[in-house]
Length: 111
Length: 112
Image (cartoon, rainbow over all chains, first blue to last red; front, top):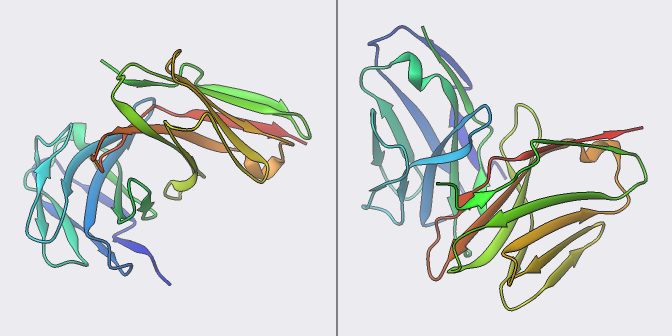
């Protein structure tokens, strides 16, 4: 049982480059989320998708876009990467109230 | 303003002793609380939760206590083991929301 799978695990970008972080879950969960984790800042919600076909902004959405491709997949896109987006990104999914299952993370550096 | 606060960034405990991790919240509408554990280079994993209708929930070595009047919850680990060394996140949500608010985490180190 793979759970939540994130790709890539590591990425280095130059300022201004774009990229898409991929996330897929095999637990048939309705809700999916993207978080970023920065030192001393905990987990901050970027975007979430309550169900297939819907997406909503979280606490820190600026500079990001998302796509809920289907029930399994939820991608996060950086159109023009900035050094401030250097972070570790986590995707999560949930069904039962609030218990989220997280992927292993994508470590992104923007130079 | 942080609605969920973990005021101790780190905690060091001897193996076999009790670890107590604390969490305070400001939103009186929060009615469901969770603890997640995170090892380096891994995603957080759910550890234990508690509903506001309870004041205690126990799962093996882990117990969460909720004091609603003080808007405070704590996670007790007894006995602590070196494998418990990780970052622990407190999270809270309100009503029908499925979006928890996370604290900034406490790094627990259990020394052999």
